[in-house]
Picture 1 (cartoon, rainbow, N blue to C red):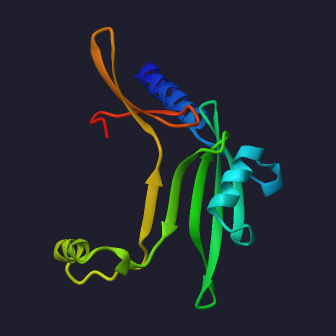
Picture 2: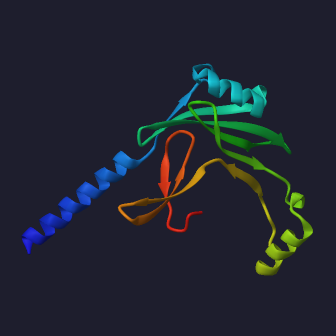
Picture 3: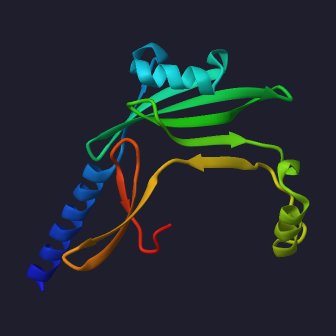
Length: 159
């Protein structure tokens, strides 16, 4: 029995450490420290005066950069736009807060039908850039997403 508990503790320790290894490492940096390609794309995508936070993210031997912009409305600051880029300046994900009324009327009706009495507090438009890859390894089907920064995300459904 004691051996069994020791094994479980050991497995738990290994899994916790594996999680730490697989986790992202995020460090806040200055805009000036960005690679030139990222700076160029950022300046085409966001207003320099609105940039509130720049983060360098290392994840599984890949590097990406997250740039947040703020907007003031009713005397409150809130995140308005978030751009995630690969180190070559390619946009991987663009998130922007948008007004609820930008949805089409049928879209609003579908939401309100599913969630009667809903009061939408925030709506974000999210765009991601990646490739869907359908392949075979040793005769077995394989589906994954391949991002511009080299990150790979396996999928079961190919979406």
